[in-house]
Image (cartoon, rainbow, N blue to C red):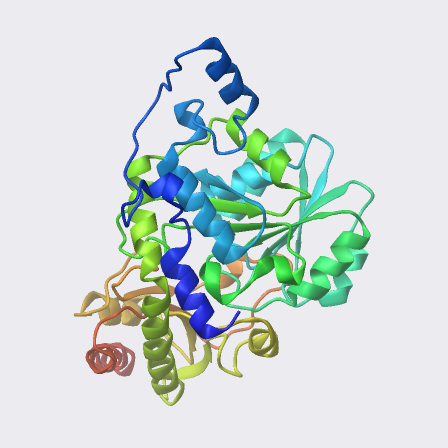
Length: 396
């Protein structure tokens, strides 16, 4: 997909006249009940309820259908299921393809709520989870059992940012008839094309870059032909649905996704390079930089980056980190990311979230999301933060 073609797709995807009714944007269609004028019309809707036909509010309205079309046009696959948040997309995708007695393979660097779901919900259901080193590659073959059904990827990984060799992992998984799922939130629908690299189901926390304004909770899961019918029907039976008002805001956010990501990427690289030169920094974990595990896979498979990365410090403690973070002017502290604002969080014990491969980091880790503020203002904010950080350490 060429650059001009991609930028055009971002603007035109999901704008079929049957959804827009000749308006630029699809109208917000709110509905619980869909009414019919005849038995024949109702029977037709019932027979075609899975194929973007108005049938019942939980199945969606034209607002939802337009956004689903747009996601498929940008990310690939044949269908897109919608959920009230990214975690719901993850958990319902997994639940759609497991049963008691099954076994799944989960990347060790996965988003913390996904790990909690495996340990606290799947375990009670009789589904066993094995966590694997994100950089395992061909070695994933040794972990597959006769009852393994799902291989779950997240690339780059949450917080530690390892970029996985998705094509290799998917190839091995398919040799054993596993369903390959990927949390593709970091790349958004436009910077990594999952179905070109062997993924069966691609999941987005659309809360983040798709919406882009920190004001909507939303999840999506796009699937290939192999998995779409099962994902769609299982998610429907588990009661998953979304507000058309939220979908409208997601569609509006989608239109500026390309230009926003370009600015996030440009600014984050400038900040990351500045951080890499700081004496307090051991190394930067930004997929576009050589110091990040899997950087070669990023160069090979991704079309671009974004604003989210991590940095490992040489030293530090809770008191010094608190002094640094409490005084930030432009960086806020918050768990979600992908909006226009810059964020910063500290993690002093990443190994509490890792079981397959512990990290031997020199010091604590900071996770940053670089927003759309002036990048020089952000650097000055970080510089002042390091002054507070060092003042505490130097007086201990």
